[in-house]
Structure formats: C-alpha cells, structure tokens
Length: 143
Image 1 (cartoon, rainbow, N blue to C red):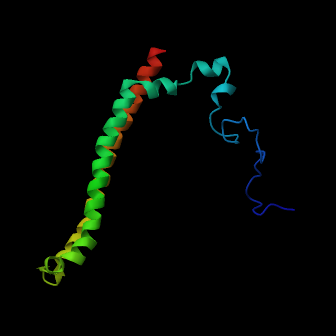
Image 2: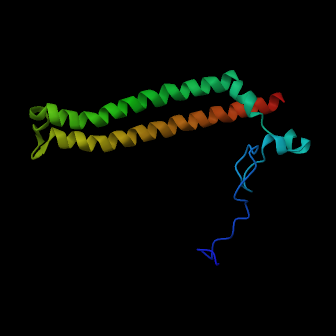
Image 3: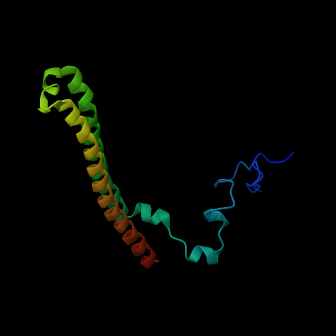
C-alpha cells in the first residue's frame, strides 16, 4: 500500500519502544545521558548543575518578577473593557472625539498596550538570554 503522501520520506522509527526508554523514539536530537560515550560526555553541558546553581535560580526569579506582573496587568486591562462597558455604561459612552466614545478609545488602546508589553518582553527576554548564556559559560568554565 503506497504512503498517503509519497513526497514525504518514510520515518524508520519503530512504532513501539521498550518500557525502559527514557527519551522519545526519534533519530533527531541529542542522545540520552545513558547512551553517550565518554568522548561525547566530555563536551556536554551539565544541566543538573546549572539547574541547581544560584545564578539559574536568580534568573528564574527575575523572569517571574517580570512575567507575572505583566500578565496580571494585561489580563486586568483586557477584561476591564467588557466590565466597564457592562457596569459603567454612562462613562464608557461619553463622546471623546466626535462620534468616538471612551469605549472605542479604550478598545483601540488595547492593541497599543499589547504591542508595548510585547516590546518590553522582547527587551527583558534578551536580558534573560544574556544571563542564561553567562550561567552556561560559568558552568562550562568550572568543569
């Protein structure tokens, strides 16, 4: 029986694996730790040591200090529109610029707020990536 998509190469990966398999059945990606040779292990990064390091824990705390308040702010900002339209109709129906009322202005501001938060996150993520590279370099140098 021909494959459904004849242009796609056949995957030689077996359909089932042993119950002791610790890595997904695939031919791509890094080998599991128990399958590496000593030569391959020599250049490997010790992720367990990195996860236990104080620098990594500080990186996680820094990420949480940014992500959680930003997420809470945006969720509150996003859900403020339907709540205000439902419960503060006189306020939200006040005209601001001709036929444009406060509700339309607030809805439009959500697009700008999303872009601002995305830009702030990109800036913070670059800082987090730089810290992560430094942590990996410190761990590699300590070996």
